[in-house]
Length: 351
Ligand code: ATP
Ligand code: MG
Image 1 (cartoon, protein in one colour):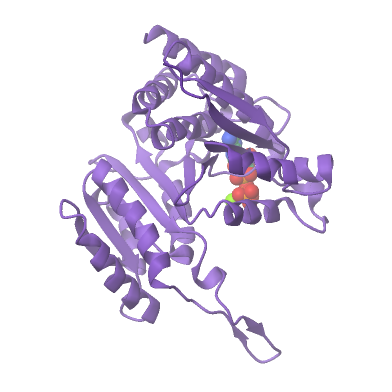
Image 2: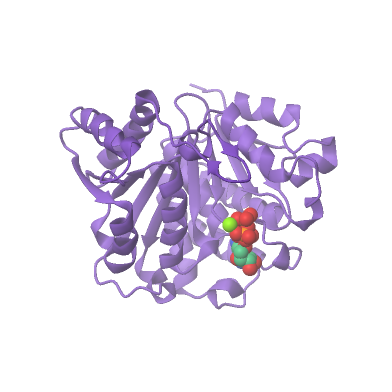
């Protein structure tokens, strides 16, 4: 019985992007060896590298490959080299999200026991939640948008179907986790928020095992600091999600360890670290590869249903942190390569 190999498109991008992508792909190779997981990875230029290679942050071949693949792995793009470019590396990111219809952005926030020492928060209960953020609508895209000398106007607009599809992502996620969704909004003020409550309430009836509660965004911002253990899945619209997910990243105390996923209804999902291309440390071999390695684990779980392989990776990362084989951003003195070697060795020893 032979299945067609999975196709993975890798977009290393810029500055530390290629350094951490190399680490992530080495770990993917190690964890899948003899595990009945057949795949090919092809790398394509994207972001600044796309501009350099093809004059376009999202070259046609890159987009075609991404569309035809089962999952897309992205490292990081952008940086000072392309500051004056007509189309910046970041426009490539907006375009690929749109082309792949990636309407749900998912960011885990977990403080595992070995990560506790990096967290500014003294939590007694384990912190482990995900934010599901609507990514392709809301005030970032609503029209009209105007600016005159005397006033400016942005429009927050949502349709029922835009809310329904991202709500379903959140409830499916809750079903696989701790059966709890918190809808974060500003329903005491905003019409769009009142509408979200109505539509999400309807979706909730299809998930009787999942508890749905609500939090105003200002209160949620406090709870993420004061009592983050109460959350399982936070569902929210685009602007609130942008702000809360950066806040949530801070309570883990480590930008360099957090992966993310953006997904649509059909077609490949895209996995990437939450941090940028870190031009300040590029080329030194000291970038923290955990965010990329964990993005690989997230891909194995969500695109390929290989929770077992993801668990092996995450345990190996925890092991590396526990034995303090970590890069300088986590207070260690190991290089990207040494950290990656340690992770791979612990994967091999676990077998
Ligand atoms: P972007 O706008 O692309 O998100 P940014 O301005 O938020 O970029 P990052 O590139 O995320 O900035 O970097 C912020 C800081 O965190 C920098 O000092 C960078 O060196 C550090 N940093 C980010 N990622 C890593 C990593 N993987 N390993 C070590 N340090 C990192
Ligand atoms: Mg940033």
